[in-house]
Length: 363
Ligand code: HEM
Image (cartoon, rainbow, N blue to C red; front, side, top):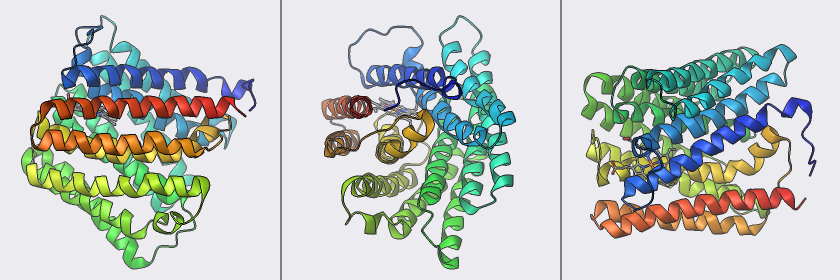
């Protein structure tokens, strides 16, 4: 491993640190929301779990990843780092004695920055995957704008879910370039994205109906990914390729299940059903995809090399089994099962982070 970061890599370290800080605080807040008796740290932390996870951790990480890619195409494009910087500063501002408009405004500006990054990326390389990711960034912007305008978090949540799902689906298409899509497959993909987007717009006026339509779109996307992603073939290979497929396939199944729950339950604003609707998507799909793609993306973003080891299956298995527990706890109202499932979700995330650090150091 190259241990000395080059000057061009230096701005990435504090930005990555801000994203990780948001993740750790978000995980702590998640335990508080589950009812574990742990110190509250700050009075507002309990309410900040969602914003910390989506706008803080993933918003900063995704903007950083795109800023790195764009800055490599020209020195003047370093301005792109403003997007993750604003999103990251939004995390810090959440804990300062300032008006809530400040962190929400910073995060919204960060999302605007990501939209602009994608405008440039799309002009350089117009493609279906970049169009889908650009739409994802716009959804983040709308979700943050709702939050900035004082709407309750649950109103922003479908937009945030749309942001993450479309960004990840677009990245999947980008990484699996070899996948040659037939016209009919492209149409089905666009139809699913269209249903999801229509559901989001409708949720602004008729929340319950909009969320249900979003559910249909999410389930259709899950099915599409299960059907057309190369992972069904690469699961028969070996090593890292097989491990990535083992992250993707259950992730798609969770997205399908999550979509069906959204369709069945509709506009629930809190509680166990809400937990199941959200975390089938956020933990089952989003985190599983991150477990798979991190081994490709972290080296590209941070300029370090990570060595794959089969030990990566341990956090992956724990993540899915504990999520199964948690969702059963949610659906059958077994509260301790839900609490332990959520706690073990977090153990899986921390174990994965530990393995990433360990595999980077060993090179
Ligand atoms: C890894 C372990 C996680 C735990 C233990 C956890 C825990 C929770 C809990 C208990 C709730 C409240 C549900 C209710 O109303 O009963 C919640 C809400 C939420 N979670 Fe998580 N979560 C985790 C991961 C994530 C991830 C990875 C994301 C995003 C990518 C996320 C985003 C959200 C959002 C947006 C909300 C809604 C917040 C609100 O309405 O204020 N969570 N989470």
